[in-house]
Each structure stands twice: as structure tokens, then as C-alpha cells.
Amino acid sequence: MLQGLSHSAQGAKSWPFEQARALLARILRLRLSDAERDLAATLIGAGKADEAVATLEPLQRSVIFETGYGPSGLPHVGTFGEVARTTMVRTAFRALTNDAIPTRLIAFSDDMDGMRKVPPGLPNQEMLQEDLEKSLSVVRDPFGTHESFAAHNNARLRAFLDGFGFDYEFMSSTDAYRSGRFDATLLVALERFDAIQKIMLPTLGEERRATYSPFLPVSPRTGKVLQVPTLERHVDRGTIVFADEDGERVEVPVTGGHVKMQWKPDWALRWVALGVDYEMAGKDLIDSVKVSSQVCKVLGGTPPEGFNYELFLDEGGQKISKTKGNGFSMEEWLRYATPESLAYYMFQSPKSAKRLHFDVAPKATDEYLQQLESFNRKKAEGANEPQIDNPVWHVHRGDPPVEGAAISFALMLNLVSAANASTKEILWGFISRYIPGATPSDHPLLDRLAGYAINYYEDFVKPAKTFRAPTDQERAAIGDLAARLRALPADADAEAIQNEVFEAGKAGGFEPLRAWFTALYEVLLGQSQGPRFGSFVAIFGVERTLELIDKALAGDLVAG
Image 1 (cartoon, rainbow, N blue to C red):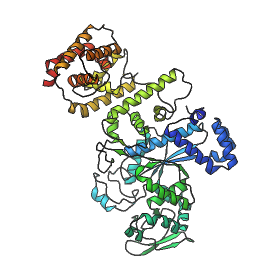
Image 2: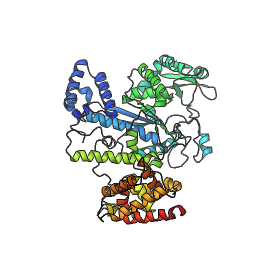
Image 3: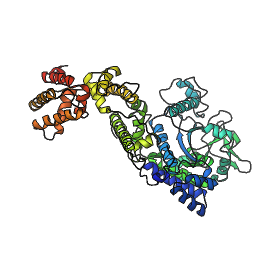
Image 4: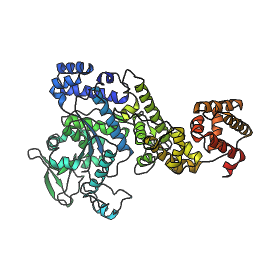
């Protein structure tokens, strides 16, 4: 699906393409001479990226994308967001270069980091307390299912990423240090110890400066990752000397997993050792990115391209925190809405702070469905240019599905509410009448929406549902609407029904007309907003709607 898009991608305006163009400029700048760069830019701009790659050997090396993960806890919505957004940039880069320059996405687990505190809520708290300060890859698994706490969480991370179909390579910090993958860069760090300290010490408080070292030695005696000063350095031997917990001076090599770097120098170490070309980070890490970028240059590397995305906020505007448990978790989103809608929400304005609260899921779902419908409609109409700026192109990595949904999520929610549906089977009784011959097997997206709508209704709508009696003006207008519905032909469609709803509101003297629709939702459905009312009546059925109106006017809904 990405072949043949490079020319169209040149003019794409969505943010992943902006990032992809900056990344391509980096690759050309760092890998090629001036003459080679001009040649490559000309060929790629003309849609001949494959020719550029075949001609210029440096372009045959993979472009490395990276996302980082701390395995002290389980994957969460921030993990999803970072991998999803990075994948969107990767997809845009592939389209920009006609998929000719190879790419890799590394999902890096910082599992050699020491466990500084016991995460609350886990089993075997005493056992974990005993393992404090040890690498997460050494800390025993409190769940008893894996060889370590990190192995348990890493397995969850990989299952999580696999469940969303991400294309990535998993990499463990412990494996990278112990295997020697980082050795050459660690020896450079040892040689340039003073230059690293010159960057790091001004960023620290006075007390921390007195003991800070970029190297965290692993105690040969206890296995703990120690935050102690470096007493001696021996560049010729590739070693450092430190005081172990018992005061004994110990000399260890900085290679082979005997030390781990502090996290900001460690970030720079990864960029250099792995040749990372692109990594994004949250706005809270802006200063950390700057510091790590300075260390990266000291180590002889060039900091990767990337950008700082805004953080998610809870209902009160506070930053979402795993520790606080505020906001709307990824597990909750996936109980009430599709994974695609979550990816769509991640795509939208990543540099703007957004609330992640339960009421955004239905809206994001319907916006996603509208964009998918627009994509497929324009595709069917034979649009000249590929719709690579449509969010669903990015959500589905360049290959959106053909299937959409003829019923919005908001409408499905109101159908659940009006029908008091507790199962998908009840909903399908209405859906199959609205879409003749439709079944869950041939409309799987609708079937999924039905399940999500039931969950959302039960947890959020039903507890807050409050019917009210109509005012005299509303009672007269609703009675007029009932008469209009009875006069409609049996085959009246949603548009014809909506016209009568409008006419009843106008005849009732509602100004603005929005007040009429609010009255319908509050009196008939027990909530302040809802979908297009004509569509609701079309799927719920005119006769059932009339029964609902009769109950409302009789006061039965308020009494119930």
C-alpha cells in the first residue's frame, strides 16, 4: 500500500509527514556528501527513492526508530501513545521514501535499572523489599510466573504491543549491557568522563553533585545497582574503582554489564550505540532530552530527530499519573471503545494537552468512523490523490479497512438506553431491521460497537440517567411530533423523520432550536444530549418511539 506514494507524500501536511521529512533530511545530511545528498534529494523528490538507495550505499542501512519503556510497572496508555505515534512517523517515512530505505522500530526496556521503591499494590511486598536496589531483571517476580520482575513486565509489554499488531524489535537493557553491545560506547564514556560530568553536575542539587557519577556499578557482593561516587578511573584498563556497601574499594570494568549508566547518560549511550535516528518524548522530558543530547555529542553521536508531545490530563486538568490512578486508563478505553479510536485520539494534535476522561471515548469513536467513511467514499469516487493526510491512513498504517459503520456510536448508545438493552442480541434485533440482512459475522465492526455501547451505558450513562417531566411548551410540541410520526408512510427514512422533528420544534416556537432537541433527549432518554433524532427513530422504530412518547407524556418514565 505504501509503494508509489513518495511523490504525493512530499506535499502531505499532517504532522507525521512533517516529522518524516525532518528525519529524511537528517539521514541525507549525516550519511551523504553534498553531491550525494543533492542526487538523493532529486531522486526521492521525483518518486525514485529505490534508485537513490540502489545508487547510494549509505541509504541501504536501516533508519532506527526507538521507544523506551520502564518495566517497573505494566504497559499503560502512555506506552501505547508513544509506540502508536512513532509508528505513524515510521509509516509516513516509508511512504515518503517509497519504502525503499529500510526501517526498524526498537522497543527498549530499561530493565537493568535498580528498583528504588516497591511498587504499591503488588503481591509479595516483603520479598520485593528484600530486592530493593537490585536491577529489575534480577528482582524476583512477585507473581511467580517469570524468572524476574522485569521478565514478567517485559512479557506483558510484548503481548501488549503484539495485541495491537505493532511491528517492532524488543530489546532489553540488561541484555544490551551484558552482551557487550554497549561496550565500545561505554569505553568512550569512561575516556570522556570529565566532559560528561561538566554537563551533568550543573543540573543537580548541591548534595547530589557531591556523589554523582555517570556510572552506576553493580555490587559484586550484593548485586545492587549502587549510586556511589567513582573514586578512580583507569582508561587504559577500562575500569572504575568505587566503595562497595561494606566500604571495601572494588575495581570493575565498565563493560560486560558490570555497570549501568545514570538514566540521562544512559539515554545518550543508547542513541549512540544503537544508532537511533528518531525518538519522541513527553513534554515533561524536554530538559532531559536537552541534557541527553549534549551527552550524546560528547560520546561522538548526533542526537536523534523527534518532538515532545503534550501529556494527557484528567477531568480536573491534572497530569495523568500511574501512581495516582487518575484519568482514564487504556484498559478502560478498550472496554468502552475500539483500539482504532484510541489510536485516532493519539493522532490528533499531539502537541496540545488533552483530557483523557471517559466522555472523550464516544466522541473519538464517532470522529474515527466519520473519517473512515470519508476515506472510503473518496476512494470509491476515484480521488486523484491518495488521502495520506486523513487520520485513518495513519491509524491503519497506510491501509484502512473498507468496512465502516452505518450506525454511529452515539446512536448505538441511545439505542441501548431506549431499548434498555443488556445484550448484543437485543441490539441486533434493531440493527438487522435498519440494515436488512445484516449479521454480526458480516458486520464485525458494528458488532464490536454494540458491545462497547452496552458496557459504556451500564457504567456511565445508566447511573446518571435522569428523566424529567416536559414543560407545557414541550408537552405540546412532543404531542405534535407524535401526530406527525403517525402520519408518516411506513417506509419513511431517517431524513424524512428528521424533517418532521425539525418542523415540530419550529411549530412549537423553540428558539434556539437546539433547546427542542435537548428537551427530547431529557424527556424521552433521560440525558441532555444524543444523536440525530431522526436516525434514532428510524432504527428504534416509529411504533416503539410512539410508545416511548406516550410513557413520557403519561409521567411513567419519571416515575420509573
